[in-house]
Length: 262
Length: 275
Image (cartoon, rainbow over all chains, first blue to last red):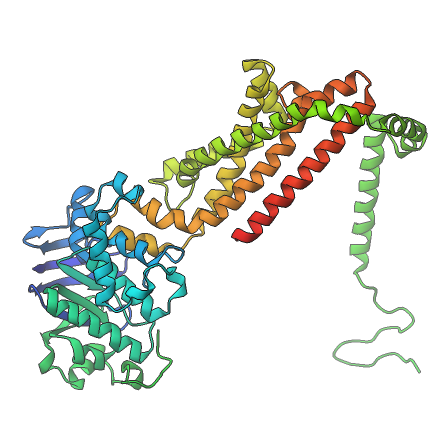
């Protein structure tokens, strides 16, 4: 369970990232956070694993305030809270397997990880997760030989290998074409349901948010301006969140290509 | 037919005296600078008592020297192998030690990896100072400390190549893709794991290439170091010259030349393959 209590974040340059956020995310929920770029979606997500640190209020994960964490506690938190990135963030020159096993780093001692001494269970887990996202045939390919969609699937396998309780996905499909985007979202959704992993996803495509989310949180200028079940959301809701009319570029579309990959 | 241009907005000019390529004032400036440079040359030549004329009058000595260098003392070649391999061994040891030491140093000297500004700045400044010391001076210092022999040469080469390697590598580290590092940090990895899993794979090809390059430099540098008693084939060359055994000296020069060309060729090929 994740709970924001009057959480605010001001960046050193004065930008207000979060403004008095109060939300409670329940275990196993699939939450999509929507908003225009700069609305604070990334800041919200990255606060949960402390890639950024809120400057005010409280942020509870499993009942503990994580804002004071550092060192070992912080690494334990990050082991529990996995992350997926817009640009996949794989080590391009390393093999798929080495990238996926990196998910075990938080569970593995420094010496063992330097010497690549992983147990058979760890390696099986990594390979099994590659199978789950249908990319196990690339196990020994170098990451830079893979397409964008394949790389994002590898990064899902990496995060699963971490065996997290929470997955944060920061614009996971923003660099992908529509069919691949749907594929990646489907995998995220599947993992969420099968493993009961709480999942927070940033998206700016409204049709995708409505299709995959249990619950939608809308943000504008660092504030939560909407919070409700996906079933209650209409285009009107989005117009309120975005503060403007919905445009074509706010939709990812079903299967036809569009260049809207920002 | 030329005639005075009559563009009222631009003014008129005399076609027989059009503007030059530069303003008149700039011409004077250039003339002055040119004259000043010539004066500096004349002054330095007079102060050091050397001029191009010496080169002309020295020609007979040049020919005499060349005459003495040839023919090379071919038979002497077999006696140089030991020292040649010592030179190469010195370069191998020095490059290996420097190659290992430069990894932690370059990490501390990279702004994106160094734990804080202090470590970064101090390491960087120390490496800057180290790089300003010429290899020959290092050799003289170490010969003074450890005495004549290959060990002093190896020490000099280690410090010398460490300066180069750490700088090249630190610049490479500063240019890597930081996204994978973020991912490894976000999955609970500690600093060492971030380095091993995120940084090292990204710099490995450049690291190998730089190390081979420094090995080439070390082979050449260790020749010169021999002149101050720091071991290797250079010591042999220095002895031959001071005993006026120019045939032997020429033999050594040929051997060095061939060895350096071969080593640079092989190392160049390997580096081409890697990058």
